[in-house]
Image 1 (cartoon, rainbow, N blue to C red):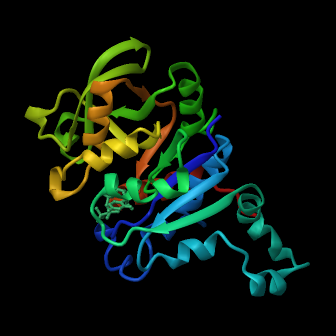
Image 2: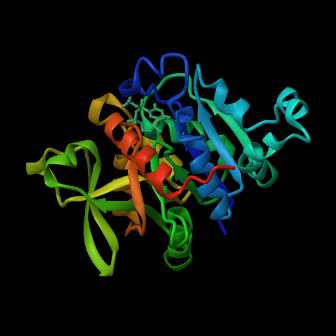
Length: 276
Ligand code: UTP
């Protein structure tokens, strides 16, 4: 139904300096797997086997990760250590990886517009890999959203409830509740102060976007932090047509922040990780 997923991975990751000075934050491992591989696995499980990466300077390790390492393959072929490569080999068997570079980091909206050339005129997923989402008891978050896209055929944002004093970290929506956990969005505000927030329903890093978003982003002026904000473009899309918000099933860890990353590591080690 939706075959492409965009991964904006060009951000600086300043909250993880100095670790991210020469290493992409998306390559930080949660236990034994880089963050971006969790994201790619979620996208592939949702049928999005073309992974379109919007990268930047200093992000070469991501392209190398999604390629064969001949030397490594040769070195461990036929040894007991091969099992350690199972998960990445599985990803490489199923996925295709395309890349474009964002030359200036002008915000998430700008990153998505940079990726237009890898997507074309079709609906697509967007996954921010610093949001690690896990749903061990059922389908992943992007799979859940594809099901919803089948019904509504419009852009969808994943949301979760956050404490009111945390709204300044997120895009926040207001809308009409259609049924349990599904809202038609009327309003979206990027990083509002608690007193300006229209609700406590915060957008996390999973989206399905219809391709008219590209033209809308082109018309969108810089917003919060002087960046071209995807939330502002989605607000326009909601006004002109339809944007849905979906309270996903599962857990989300903010791995772009140190506390969220540590929490994810602890959770994955105790509940998900299996030694090869
Ligand atoms: P963040 O707000 O987390 O920014 O971006 P960041 O630079 O990655 O991290 P900090 O805040 O400096 O620690 C949200 C997502 O959008 C991507 C980032 O890679 C991240 O996945 N992004 C952001 C881009 O690809 N390009 C941009 O210009 C901005």
